[in-house]
Amino acid sequence: MAKRKTPPPPSLPSAALYLRVSTGRQAESDLSIPDQRRQLQDYCKGKAWPMAEEFVEPGNTATDDRRPAFQRMIDTAMAKPPPFHVILVHSFSRFFRDQFLFEFYARKLAKNGVRIVSITQEVGDDPMGVMVRQMMNLFDEYQSRENAKHTLRAMKENARQGFWNGSHPPMGYRVVAAEQRGEKIKKKLEIDPIGAETVRKIYRLALFGVGGSGPMGIKSIATYLNDHNITTRAGGRWGVGTVHHTLTRTTYIGEHVFNSRNWASQELKDETERVVMQVPPLVDRDTFEAVQNAMALRNPRTMAPRFVTSPILLGGICFCSLCGNAMTLRTGKGGAYRYYTCCTKARQGASGCEGMSVRMDLLDASVIDHLENRLLNPERLATMMDNILDRRSEWIDRRRRHVADLRKMSTEADQRLGRLYLSIEQGIIDPTDPSLKQRIAELKSQRDAAEGDAKRAAAAVEKITPTLTPDLLRRFSEATREMFRDDNGAYRRDLIRAVAQKVEMLSPFEAKICGSKVELLRTLASNNGVESTALAVPPLVRRWHPMSDKTKNSADAGAQVHGSEPGWRALLDSNQRPLA
Image (cartoon, rainbow, N blue to C red; front, top):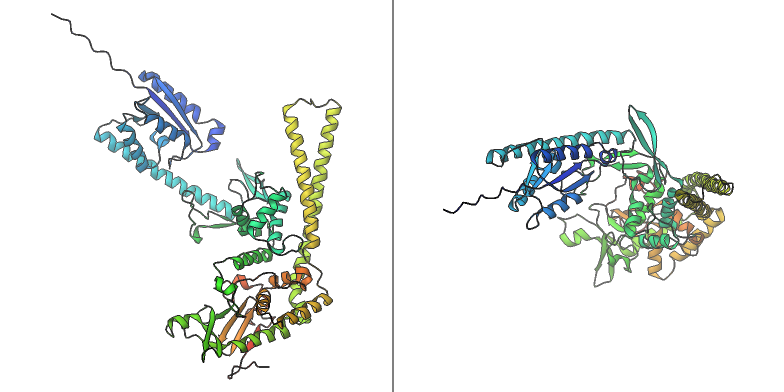
């Protein structure tokens, strides 16, 4: 009788160890990873399981699967045949804190013969064990969401008090310790002189260009910065997105917005969820708003292309006050008469807007007459510019003090470099020290950057704006009046758009002209305000409200907006003739 062969003992499953901590701080302090490793290794020895591989995730959340070591482990486990049959974790929360994703990956791995085992939450593979594991995962997810909610609430309060919550600071700022509360050191942002000068330069380029050449677009600014070896904070090259973000970031006027986007989806959060953190401003609010206005004016979505090249004098800047939409050309009597007519009424009839129509020749003449005789009066120009020039003088004084600080920084870096060279010559420092070369490079970089920024800032202060003398205002007024009478309709149209940005029809007999003081100052600054008055063809932001923040600097937006300064009003009588 033949002997029956004894079957070989089943092979023991090999295990992969997965170790994870939630924050980089935990990983750096070496608190959790070694402890997890020790416990997992002891568990494997107790079960006599061979350890196949180890996957370490230092400082990544378990609420999603965007984890390099995790994805590498999953790819390895899905090989055929798998190199291990068990993924060993300290607790299920180390693997995932999202119940749906946990089950998705657990079932995916199970199909390939790999199971997940927790050394602190041992459950079976039967239906009861699966249900218990799912309940544990739900509690882990709930706890994670609760922790996130309480953490965010604390961070929002921290921001309200003006403290920095972490991450890299915006260019132009640096993080400094502000105060200590218990074991925690609270930090704030302060201005970094070198980076701040780059930010201010970007704003100057957007408003005035190089040497008063005129405002530059975002792409032109990026090209200029790269051509002149002005780098980003990380030492990289500027792109269109980076420049745009710099020009639109409210942090630079002292209002850093915290919690503006959802961390996972990057979607904008509701206004009520955001917190404005007060930081030292880098640019004044007038400059910031002028840049936003200039960017909006260049936005092709703001003004239709047909208005940019339109032969109509007020095309694209004349609006109906009833519905806020544009007034467009309509003709009568076979083209013998031309009117500005509300486009809503023209398209939809009286049900869309009651609308109005105004004789084009009379409105054009009235607008030009009021601009010539009221706005372009030298005394009136001087009065309008007084406040903004006073603020500009204060700004120039601050900039000159900033230039002095930059030059001091450059001198100090050069002196430290000199002392370092002297120490090398005297044999105090070992010239073969590997950190010496890096320190010399840092000091040279600080010295050169501070000196370069000081030169650029000093040059910008001198060119920021001309001195508005009575003679200059008189010449500007005379030259502009002469241009208004030029037969070239396109030239007159561009000039009007450079001086006044909106004509609002209040009724068929009354219009209000609105403009920006900053735009007017920029027009004056362009080639001394005489040779090239129309810097660009500024389109117009359609939705305009008299009491909004964007019109606080309007040159003349009506008496109800600026009580101390009457508005420009072109008045027409019942026969649609200009009133005196």
